[in-house]
Structure formats: C-alpha cells, structure tokens
Length: 118
Image 1 (cartoon, rainbow, N blue to C red):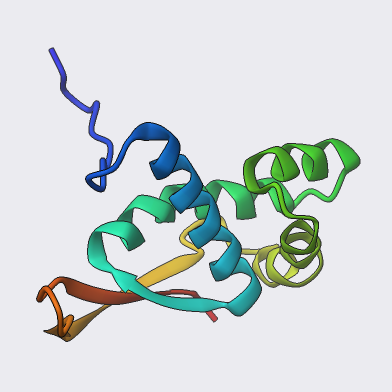
Image 2 (spheres, helix red, strand yellow):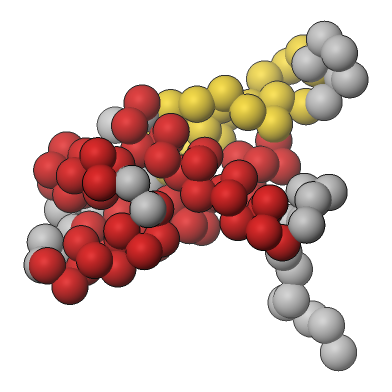
C-alpha cells in the first residue's frame, strides 16, 4: 500500500523537480524569505528543515553534504555562517509558510511566502 509515500510532483519530471527544489532552497537561504506558490513552498519545507538541522553542527563533512544538496558555495556559506547559528537552541520548525489571500494574476494559483522563523 502507498500509505505515507506522498511527494509533491509539481507537474514536472523528476530532474526538473530536483532542480526546482534546489534553486528554491538556495533562494530561501540567501534571501531569508521568498514568495512562491503554496505547493512549491510545501515541497521545499522538508528539504530546508533538514539542511538547517545539518548545519547546526559545523563540520567539514556536514558542509560537504550540504554542498551536494545545494551545489552552491555561497548558499552553503550563508547556511552555516548566518542561518544555522540563529537556530542553535531551537529543536525544529525553522520555517513558516504564510498563505496569501489573492491568487496569482495569470492562472489564479494560490501563493504563499515561506520564510525563516525569527
């Protein structure tokens, strides 16, 4: 049975989905918050949470693991130097999804803002 095997497919092929999640994670880490569709925000939340948990322990091995996930040196540096130290005492729940009321102008998609908790 398929209980618990849910993944956000986002209407694209697996390679495109992986690149999309990777790019959205990089943007969230570098900017602190991003505005995107609700489904994409829910899709990247687990990945970002796991990266922040990994970055709380600053070792070379953890930096290399984060680099394999993000493939961006600047984002890894920002993750370990600015984002993770804010959450040293927090056991989890590093991001927040704020749903916006209006839909997107072109297709009416539900939009939301995903941001780090302050």
